[in-house]
Image (cartoon, rainbow, N blue to C red; front, side):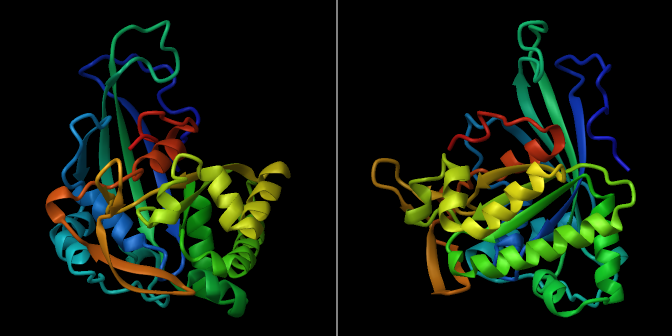
Amino acid sequence: MVDWFNQNKSTKSSVTEPIDRSGVIRVIGDRNSGKTAYMASLAYWPNANASSPVQTVTPLNDDTNQLVDNAQNILEQGLQLEPTDLNTSVDDIRDYTLSIVLKGQFSWKTPKVNLQPQLVRLNISCKDYAGEFFSDLLHRNGDALLGDYLEDCVRATGIMFLADGTSHQKDSQYSSGLDKFLIALDRTDISSSQRRIAFVMTKCEQSELWVNRHEPRELAQARFPQTFRKLQAWQQTGGGQVDYFTTSAFGVLGSKYPEPNSVRIKRDRGGTSSCIKDPKRWRPFGLVAPIYWLCTGERHKELDKD
């Protein structure tokens, strides 16, 4: 298991020797939460902004290479990868492994002590669980495969809970599923180790979300109040750390009068389904910020910007 709190504390770094911050992350969320679009856009990393703190995103295994190969079709045509079957064993679930290198900056912990700009490399492994994971937690008590999934979550160093930001009418369902998940996680983890959970609102190119993208905590509290209270209670009782993020796999067009860089396929109580509108101006927002926090426990101000 990766020791994400203590790893490399004593390592001396320089411009040519990036600080390594590794994490084993599990991505959970329902079928419409945007997990595939999030991972595809992150792996493909289209039209990166020259001022972005992200230098490179490199796939490191076959699952991730396949995701990159399919990313353009997935996002431009609104296609989906074959969904993960909940009957799939934990060992056979797609595991996306990436190396994300952030551009040189002053020391991430002690900017006044070390004046050499330092690269930071995030080595992550993300397993993409089936979309029915949460709903089945509510209805399939004692299921052996669900037990295997939970044990796999225990081995992870961080949990990324993705929720379609426009699916706020499902707040009570998310809250109930999260409650079951946290209780089961606590019972499964005999070491009672603390972990981090990033609550990530996706599809924030939508106008009602975009205007509040820089206030993710407040946005989560307003749109998902029951889920927010559940996460805060878990943190206050010593379960671990929680933080909140907004992301968009597509981004927006324009700056003074922004509009979603997406074409809506459908929208209902379950959220919004879209595909990219203008691939030439495809610029995702906020994809790396939650990963950085899950790996380091710190917010990166530049990653939180547009």
